Image 1: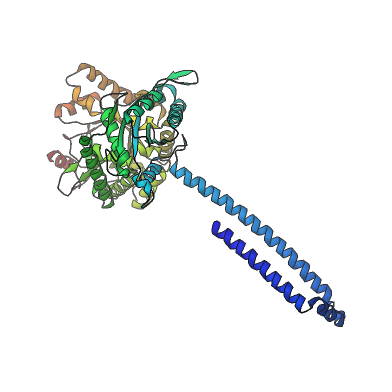
Image 2: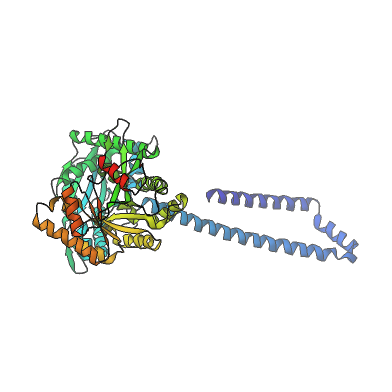
Length: 513
């Protein structure tokens, strides 16, 4: 816009310069008298009236042009303002108005070669505990109010502090006061610990805090927030309302995490994380009716990185959408060659249930691979649903309307299990392996297992038991009326499926793995 305005001003200057030059030339040549004589000589042609009309038309054209330029400048201002709002939205959290993680990373990096890179500061990483309980018992609106109140309190502690909201229950505070970080951390914890009164309810929130100083604890500013988060995770292991300072021993953990992040990014770029397929067996007929695609990351050394390590990391780094799309695309291409009755089960993470474009992404992959919609089953956990119940409900409803089936994974280990069954359109219930393994030794667990199977059957849902590792477990689940089994006894995950999919021959092959 500044460039456009400068060009506009130059045009005005040129116009006035030309006007003054023409006026001066007219005076020198005595133009008015010459034109009068010319018009009198050819009065029969009405040239003087034509000349007046041309002048009036030119003046009106000039006025119109100026008005159009004014409108154009106003439109440029509006667009610039809209672009500024978009840029702000990218760098700020919509709930609290605070800068987000992207803004934090930019601030810590500082301008290239600038003095901001060398400015000493302390980072305080804060994790609120008990927020999920507030959301479950009092509602999402009160949970949002708690986050907003906490953000306000942190912002008012020290005028020079910079407060960042990283999403959910996570905050980072950057302070230039490096003299007494332990004292400042106590002030932060006291501010958070004060009761929050909203809609007549008094809410108390606990927290964990970790802090690190630059350049005392870590020699690079961009890694400061990670060092503080590392200390916070150490504090979290000791329970709520615990603080921890970054130590040299934690530096090894930070370096390990940074190495893990780099390796994960490289693996995703190289499509080194692949789907492995574990069979889903009909316990009544013994036939394989489908496969669950499980993410497996095999390193160049031949070792496997557990999904429990790299999936949460991919979520935190914002790589989970790209990773999931790659895995689902490959899995759908593989499954397209299976028999028409064989299904593909695929896990959806908690972070993806906040993505309201998830349904469109999945349908695009199905269209690209030609895999039928009705053969895809998406598995979600109870804990993933409650993180943002409103978005989860929107996403799941859109998926169901598209013809995709939804399974509730790890049933019984999350939150508000029965309410989830009532609110969401699940086609299947997957019983967590903890109930399967303990039911043979605990009568209470056995009764719970029977209750889950009976409940699912009455609701018209297919019951899937995962984690079957012994023949006795399979026989018991079959007797209880469980529909489908999954586990090492029935077949281990494999990268490639050979033989006729869905047949008993393949089942025997998987049992030998």
